[in-house]
Amino acid sequence: MKNISLYIHIPFCKQKCMYCDFPSYSGKDALMEEYINALCKEIAREASKYSYNTVFIGGGTPSYLDEDNLEKLLNEINKLSLNRNLEFTMECNPGSLTKEKLDIMKRYGVNRLSLGLQSTKNSILKEIGRIHSFEEFKSNYSLAREMGFNNINVDTMFGLPNQSVEDFKNTLGEITELNPEHISAYSLIIEEGTVFYKLWEEDKLKLPSEDEEREMYEYCVDYLNKKGYLQYEISNFSKKDKECRHNKVYWELEKYLGCGSSSASLIDGKRIKNTEDIKEYIEAINSNKSAKVEIINLKEEDLIEEFMFLGLRKKEGIDESIFKRKFNKELDSIYEKVINFHINQGLLVREKGKIYLSKKGIELSNYVMKDFILDK
Image 1 (cartoon, rainbow, N blue to C red):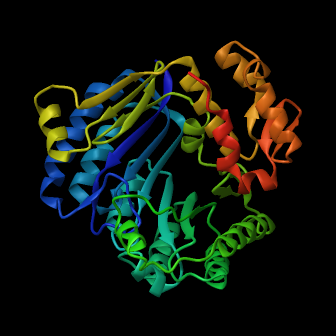
Image 2: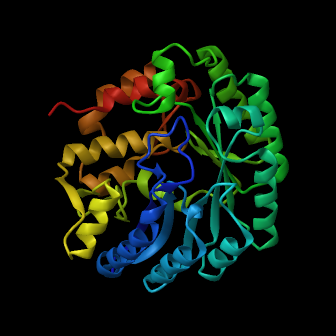
C-alpha cells in the first residue's frame, strides 16, 4: 500500500465569514446526515486503497457537525490503514465546539486541533462575521488542553478592516500567552464573490494601508521568533518539531487523496476535483457513480511550476537534490537565468543546495514567483 495523505472536506458552517471564498455553506444543515453517509461511502470506496501518514478534516467547519455525524465519520476513518505516527488534524471553530465533541475526537485518534480565532478583539471578530468572542475561544482552548490535546494550531489574520497595528500586536501577545504549538498568520485577501469584495467595490471597507500591513507582518515574524516559534512557511510558525506535516505534503507536491464535495486529490500525476454541489455529490455517491468533475493529467511543466511556487513559500525553500530526484534534471537547466536575476536583486538566496526567498524576497514573493511560470 502506498503511504499518502488524506483530506476530508466538511462544507457546513453556522455562518459564512465575510472574507471566506471557500466552498462552504450556511443554512444547509438539513443535508448534513445525508452528506456524512455519502462521505463515509466514498471513504470506504476510494480511501481504502492507501495507507496514511496524515489526515486533515477541513471545511467549512468540521466541528459544526453534530455528535452522531462526527462519530460516524471518525469511525469510518478509523477503519482505514493509518500509520502509527499519524498526524490527525481537525479544524474547529469556537462557538461550535463542546466537551462531548472533543471527547469523540479524542477517542477516535484526532491528535491535532486547528482553532480558528483570527483576532482577540471582539469588535473585529464581529465585523468579519465570526460567531464567537475571544472569551469563548479561550474557554474552548482551555477545555481542549484539559482533555489532553497537546498539539494545537491557532489561526490569526492581519490586514483586517479597522484593525490597527496595535490591535494585531495585542492579538499575537494574547495568543502566545496561551502557548499553542503552532500559529498561522494570514493576510486578508479580498476574494471575488465574498461579502468583503462587494463592500470593497463600494468603497465601504476601511483597510489598513500597505505600509501598516507590511509592519504587521514584519512584527509578526520577529515577535514569534523571539517567542520560540520558528517560521517554516510564509504564513506558518511552529515550535520545534511541531510543523503541520499535512500542509508540508501540499508544499512538497507529495501525493494526497481528497474525499467530500469540492475536495481535490493529487495522485499519479493527476489533479482530481470533486463537485462543489452538495446535493450533486450525495446523488453521485449514492448512485455508485463518481463525484469527480475534473481530472487533469498534469504535464511535467505544470508539476515543475507548482513545485517551485509551493517550495518557495517554505522558509527552507527548494532543495535542489529533491528537484533532481523528482524531475530527473538539474534546476539550472530550466531556471538558471531567473534564479541568478533574483539573487542579484537580493530576493533569492542560494546556499548548501537550497534556494530560498530572502527577507526582502518574502515581502515581494508574488513578484519573484511569477518569473517561475514556464513558456508552454
